[in-house]
Image 1 (cartoon, one colour):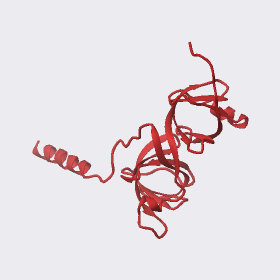
Image 2 (cartoon, helix red, strand yellow):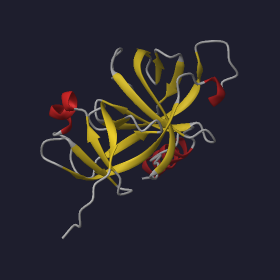
Image 3 (tube, one colour):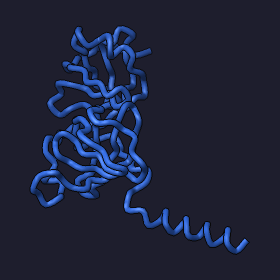
Image 4 (cartoon, one colour):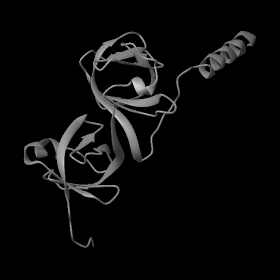
Length: 184
């Protein structure tokens, strides 16, 4: 009994000392993000083609060349990675090039708005976001978008030229739409 109790205390101590945050989440609103590919992996790190290195608190089984989207906080250096539709907590560890290891060293970051799809037509041509804005999808991308669903997390880039679906890791070119009708 004493050995079991000691083992439980040791495990709890080790888990509490983890340098990686658990359940990192982002509310809707302005965010920083990176769209890239995984260049290489070690047991607990990802190196992206853009030169950033991200750590995870579990063994990594993702493969090089996988697409990745990372939403991150400039103040805490913590983020959420979306790899093949799966959310994983990550921590910014540095870069492969000469830098100081701060978010100022992150190349190719973008700014956007994290939101949710509140409505989407069955043809994939019109999307309504949580802020009640409407977006027309370019015709050549509607076949992919029609598989998107209400409630999915998306990023609207600040250029307002594209929306990224985090579950599918798909980008759709969009144009802001003025929709005038009264919902029943």
